[in-house]
Image 1: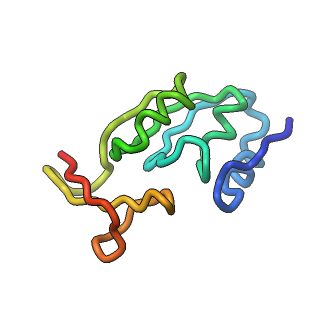
Image 2: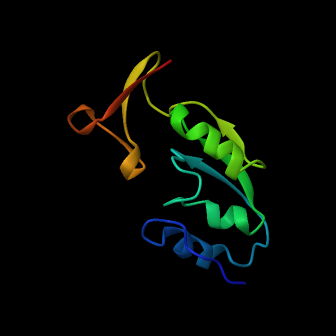
Length: 109
């Protein structure tokens, strides 16, 4: 079975190498961002795997729902803090960063 890489640096192919005997499985992706481009689980989704996508930024939610309808979207931030936090989304890089690099600021509860 062949799988195309959708990750930024072929991380999905490295993981798939060790899991290739599993025809179907599940995953949890923390900080999904774009559901296809530079995504570490999309190749597995295309192979029939299903999972939970954790993504706090609303800018990605509609694309996730369209591109990954069989995955569960969890709208939360994973952190060691309780309460509201400031996060900065650099959508061009498909990542979250600290204040010094932030382009858009989103308050998360």
